[in-house]
Image (tube, rainbow, N blue to C red; front, side, top):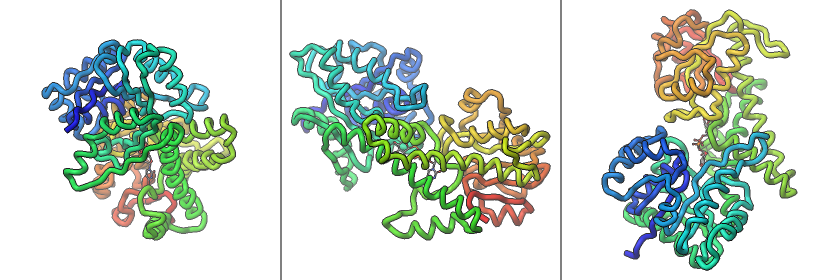
Length: 454
Ligand code: UDX
């Protein structure tokens, strides 16, 4: 077929590393760029910096095939690529409002300065709407005018744990473009994805739009998902006072295809590197644009989500027979096993993890907290060194007055309540993710409390 453009990915964090590796797998010649010398050395040595199923094998295979390389040299990167994808981080600003675009600015301006031929710069990082226009001005300022360097925007929708499949088999591709040339380049840069779909008898819908819409699609999708989770958690709150069971309620409303049964799992709420930060940045940007009122409900979405953490504290105090005063419960003298530290199962990511936040709150309330997580221990220890970590589930629960299951790992879902019952001091369990078979636990003599369940 037609020659494929050579592509680079600037920023080899979660997003950029996954994309670079998967694009090499699709047959593109790929260069990944980062300022982090250590990270680049590791990637070139075949070491994936993150925990993501399948990525390790793809990295090794494509390094060996010579389609993939990583570099800290921006001039080399500029020389290499026809299409440059910007995948650097856009963290929450220190003031908590909006996104910090420092890395976008740094990577785009140094790339633009080093370009020696026409190229397309494509933003992928999650950004406030309006950033693409600003990037275009930045490129105009820093690149030689006769080159005619262009800008486009193409958001990504990776879920941790499924990132490889989400890149190779996305459920849609969205591109924000201003010219036919950019449209054609981006089509060529996605052709590998369309070709793979064709061989598997699938179709990947392509949405071509303007800059603002492309930027908004990403935050709108995340705002919708966060809202869906907080909706069911709000129903859990009502169930708690009305005596209903939110798991049955979710199942019943989920059969309506207009509602759908996914993302209706009530529990400890959403965390991770995206949803919490994105809904806050989205509100801040809407406010700046004069549409603050339109997104005021996202503030409620955030509050509902954070209230789930206090709910676990409340259930813990109840089970331990401690009073819940205005300053929270006093849990001095109790020992609590916390099972789970990551923000969801099948990842080692503890960024904005509700489980770890609750573990810290239990510790602050005076409890002797023992944490265990199948994959997240190293990151958890770094993020919260003040907690005590145990090398196994059994060791974490030994002698505990209460067990809190806060991430729904299969290891915990499948744990035998009879065996664990022999190890604990008291058989009390808070199921923060509604992931345990409550009947089985109750039968084994446990006092059980779920989220939004009688
Ligand atoms: C999310 C989006 O799904 C993805 O499209 C976007 O690109 C990045 O953000 P991710 O952060 O990997 O992906 O996590 P996701 O699987 O969406 O889960 C987010 C959080 O919501 C987790 O903490 C999870 O435990 C929680 N969740 C999810 C619920 O509490 N209930 C649910 O029903 C679903």
